[in-house]
Length: 491
Image (cartoon, rainbow, N blue to C red; front, side, top):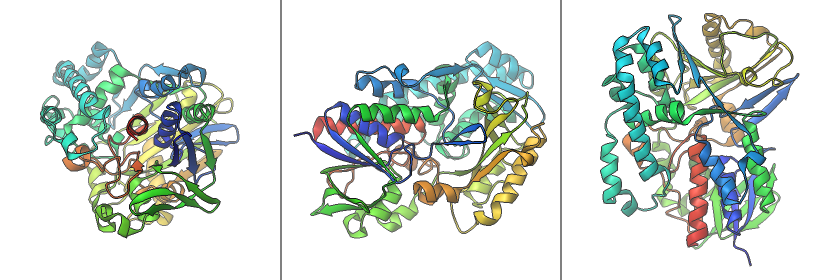
């Protein structure tokens, strides 16, 4: 008889775990409360415009490819990626533009236009970013740290000290660069894990290497094709994916998981993998008495990551200044993070990111139109911000920023939808509407995240942005694969 597992949530972590276990011969059922798999990544189509609402910057394709390889399949039979060069366009308040490129010489030329000193130091910084990535991949990204013995092993401690955990990303950048444009462009990588460059550890400088040298990729047909590919692979392996079905309780008897309850019935399993937000899973699906190590007070003590306001704009015009990925920076970058993490309010002067997949691929919008995914950082849910009142004002500030750069006419878009932190929480049960789980604004929350294996309930596992190894689409997918491989080998 095959071993049986139930996976809660059909996001990248849950699907990756399901594919891994099924490839190892397990019988797997995935239960998803939304009508479609994908978690925070969903496809929206309206009036001829196609949008991906959710993750849009795709890196580390080897992570996704490894899941297909486990199953003896080629990813290209399911999903086609194409590399973007330049990777991202960075536009600054004074009109300067830097297009992120794999070409170090080209990067130096662009930086030299406003800071010859920063241009000279760029290769040295990139060498350090590559070293940080190598150390991270060796000790953190590709292995589970299930016990304190794992976390404090001599090799892990040695390499942890080498990544200078008590140095912030901003402090590391200031060892190389002086100009605010360079600092903002490279500091923004902290937001990829829902954090502030002024608080997050220097390890996240590695993302400069991941993007510039590893590559940024588009997905033919839209980013949601990644979800469709994994779902198709899972089903081909025999995984049952049931959508529109919400888990209401994880059944625990004598400290051991027995399965999950839903409105449609009980699903028995001695192994349950929670692919949703692990803080919400504990708070909503487990009685507090069975999780003494994850009490409600302990949950409240974690700082959530930043959230975001997403605007989907289908506009019957095109904008020559946009690439596939474009970021517009304010004159001063630090106040955005003080607004978010200190005052817990929408920033007064936000950086604005646009994904315009129609730049790379025709058919994503009607003739002469643009499908714009516009994302600005926002605070996690708190009493300080009522999104029923704040959305219009914040969107207005975002539109004003873009109008200042020639991105006009958004108010008259043929399709216009705002998606707030409250919507994220309602649809995905993300704890306090956070996009990336908990923040990485401290050493503890970066390097000692909640474990993938429950300390309280035997047979209960967690994957996703709050657990090891952290947030971001490829890293969440890694957590699912690592957990699936461990369970298949040891359980």
